[in-house]
Amino acid sequence: MLMEEAKGGKVTRQIEEVARAEGVSVEFVRRGVAAGRIVIPSNVRRQRRAVGIGEGLRVKVNANVGTSPDYVNPEEEVEKARVAVRYGADSVMDLSIGGDLDQIRRMILEAVEVPIGTVPVYQASVEAVARRGHVIDMSSDDIFNTIRKHAEDGVDFVTVHCGVTRDVVETLRRKGRLLKMVSRGGSLLAAWMIHHGRENPLYAEFDYLLELAREFDLTLSLGDGMRPGCLADASDAAQFHELLTLGELVKRARKANVQAMVEGPGHLPLNQVEMNVRLEKAVCDGAPFYVLGPVVTDVAPGYDHLVAAIGGALAAWAGADFLCYVTPTEHLGLPSVEDVKAGVIATRIAAHVADVAKGRDLRWDNEISEARKRFDWARQIALAIDPDLAREIRSRRPPVMDPKACSMCSQYCALKLAEEYLREAQKR
Ligand code: SF4
Image 1 (tube, rainbow, N blue to C red):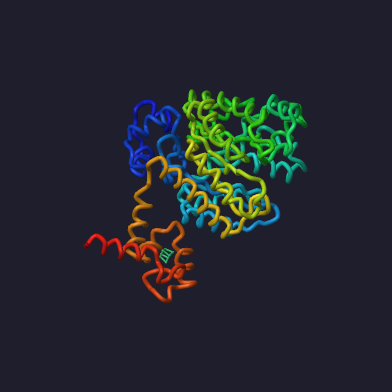
Image 2 (cartoon, rainbow, N blue to C red):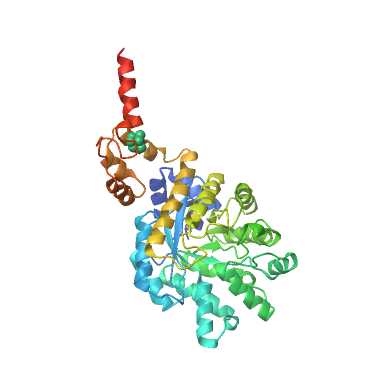
């Protein structure tokens, strides 16, 4: 148990790996893990790359992949996972809901070395529909048995919407909203709870969930079932009621030596992003904050990877630790491999922008600027976040008049002129 060992002063393999990758001391990471301000998702069943998420570490990026009932192509989902990692995703979540879910999850687990997350309630619901006809026919055993199955396969973290309690659903009902719920897992559980008049099993049996998590050292990602799905619903009563519940559950998880992070919105106007991050950090006692986006305007379907990168940069600057990518197809359809690449790169830019602002990672920017000063195009392209695209653009319209410059200003290249004349001025 990583958290227990960290509390006992032990420096584990994962802690060493994270400290090395981040350029911080092992003691810093150990203390962070012991306090619950850093998580390192790592199932005891499968040794994977150790990735630290939390305070004082670089901002991490997650990429979601997975089939839908409309498109089942396991090989393509594996390719998406590979492409996501190739372009810098720190973790991958398999959100499949179509086809042979066990097979797809296992293929993804085999394909990439980064931590893998899942949302087991999806599979429990899909199987309930297949066996008994409706999601409300799912039992609490179905949910916990699916979590166990995912853990046995070696999944490192699971999203569990424990904060969708009966009280929280009642707040939603009483206060109202434009878009009631946009969390798939949250809505499945809410439908089940309303139909049966029962409490969410993930909340009612949270101690059992902790036992399960302890057995595999599974990290819990406390899902935000009430995340706002549009700006009109941002920062409302249901969202914050759930957050308060998650704050309590973080404390219980830590007491049980189970690593936990907290998921967050969602759709937020830019001026509410920082407040949301600070609130999560205060309510959840510094638990790592994992945000989807935030999507800071609702009007740009097709460009939501850019919208989310704007929100993600601000969220990460304010203290969010883990950005879930958004692809250009968000709100429109299942992403392609190219969309996955676009989403990962946009989100990596957001994470990097925040890291630079916090005084980390500036060396990369300085290196590319040095290459730009030397007109070393090969080096510039190699250092670009997407070298393939940079190379393609440079060769699409190559320089004609001055091969040193680019075809934008050609022989009037400001960089070149300024270099030459300033050098001359210095000689005088
Ligand atoms: S100053 Fe103009 S020509 Fe020179 S590198 Fe920049 S864009 Fe290209």
